[in-house]
Image (cartoon, rainbow, N blue to C red; front, side, top):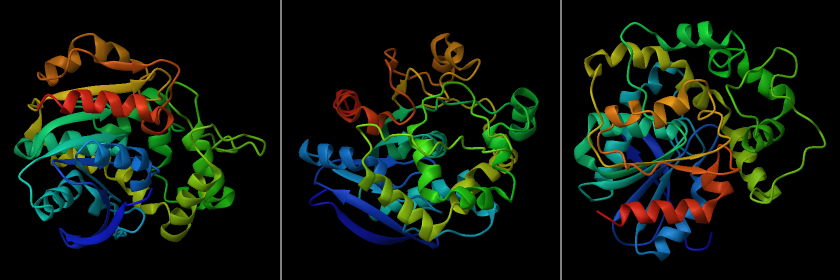
Amino acid sequence: MEGIEHRTVNVNGINMHVAEKGQGPVVLFLHGFPELWYTWRHQLVAFADLGYRAVAPDLRGYGDTDAPAEAASYTCFHVVGDLVALIESLGVESVFLVAHDWGAMIGWYLCLFRPDLVKAYVCLSVPFRPRHPKMKPIPTMRAFFGDDYYMCRFQDPGMEDEIAKYGSEAVLKKILTDRKPGPPCLPKENPFGISPDSKLPSWLSQDDLKYYSTKFDQKGFTGGLNYYRALDLNWELTAAWTGAKVKVPVKFMVGELDLVYTTPGMKEYVHGGGFKKDVPMLDEDVVVMEGAAHFINQERAQDTNSHIHGFINKF
């Protein structure tokens, strides 16, 4: 972690914490839920060594970045607005984009709204999903997966209290290390399936977990949950982009056991031509990491770095 610099930038009306290392073309890394800039610790060091300026912000609502209280402040327009201002503050015209989980969803919006700012996009875990004009996200997910589906449960204003009951560290440990494929559900009893004797994997140390939990203890989970709570609002606001295609070069990588990749219908979309139709410049070689789960940038850091570099090096 030596040499990583931290600063605060005012973007789009909020103060954003940014971690960065290195000089050269900018690679912008966007984290997901429930993470921080810290999820990219291996990438910041590796890409600085490769001659890039590696930049990883805490997104709005997370870590040391401001967290507006209302879910309506977490639409795709707010968060993409933050990123547009961040890119401008870096003094560059465009960046290489690397993003995971919710960061990946925001990455797709950035590519849709401002393709001029993205030289190439390496997307981890969450493929592009085109807007369906007749299927509002939360009611649709409720119909397909039931009320206990995690995105539906995250709509509940009492979710923060449920997390507090188990404690940040226990909940983060469970989410970060879970390897159960398929759509995640959170039953009313012990929703996170927390087991006191679960061990940490080799790629996540107690110090790593402590860093995450300390920040979430300070900030709370509302900011992160608000991204889910703005899903239906995003759908309403993006009607003008129905049928729009993503027109930047894209590389997609995912773990074989990833909860998104193993959700019914997802593999067919990724490998059956639908993804390529929506993202015409998608690299034909989709990387599926055998035996890996959702957090591949941490679990398989070296492999992930190698694939990212192999792709962005072409541009």
